Length: 482
Image 1 (cartoon, helix red, strand yellow):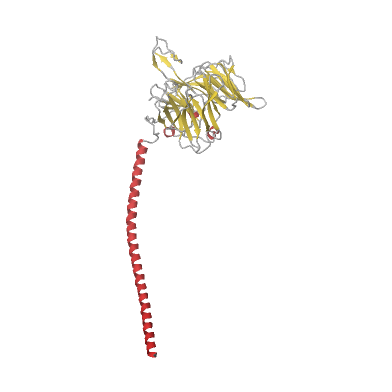
Image 2 (tube, rainbow, N blue to C red):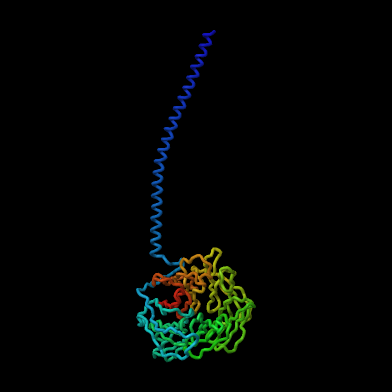
């Protein structure tokens, strides 16, 4: 019995040991196999990863090469063009001379003088017809930001006329453009002849500190506004009718917030207060005064819109939704045309049929559009600027604008009006009839200095575009026709 038990116990012990040894052996084999398999997989994955990485780097390099080629092609052939541009004339000039100007700065406070001086022609660089460069600086010092341009007709008899009327016995052979402006420091009036490069002072009337001017359509007289100081030291806005020849001027009533002209014989004056605004119309000599219309709106800008109507828009601010209204024939009835849009500024064409409207969208970006005063239809323009930086051509077919490049994110137009922000502009032409934009010139590239465009003016035949650089106050002229 004891032998039987011992035998069974021994066999069970052997079986248990064998079983444990077998299991450990299996585990050991499995562990080694797993490690070898993992190493094999890792090795293969590493090799595959290297291959994939090489392929990825090759693809990325190819894409970067294609992008670089595309950027190079764009810079060479399409830079500075909007997607609707159809032409870009060659405006490169080697030198842009300054038309010389020997004005003597005025030191007398108030208005002095009054007689027309002897013609004092001042010759600028290259003052030979047909040889003047395309871009010319007319004045070194600041001018009043209101410029008048007209085509001077010279007949075959060499008799000059500043009107468009020529007798049947004479044949016009040349039409130089005359740019008429007021020197801000002295108040003297000057003319610049684009054909000869000469300047002529036509008035020596001294009115220092003029801030604005509005010309009659024939350029014979400008209504200027400046701040005059009383004995108590306080200042008030004075309005003076300044003839082109300097003689026969007169004062208008005090308290006019704005004056502007209609044609060659009419003046409109805006008086604004807490109870609204009154717009009065008079003859050019301030006679026959009557109320054109009045409105409960107190902070407004008014423009002539065609032969009978007016455009009224609220003074722009980035924080307020502004409106444009059409006033119908001195009735005082205001019909909304555009708005509400923040920072809204408007510029109506001569016929009163379209308004150039600039504003700030919800993202704070500048936007510019054309709005019909009759149907209120909107045409988005491919440029972004402020309407104060534009001018309509005489026939309303074109708009010329200074267009800011990469303007900083600010409250517009407030920051620009206040002078805390200045722009760097390119100059563009918008053809309203053909609905295309044309790049004219990059002032910074050509002149080496930034341009902040204001007070643009173009002659009736669209030969010369004049403008003021807000940064310096200097007056420039650009020949539109090569």
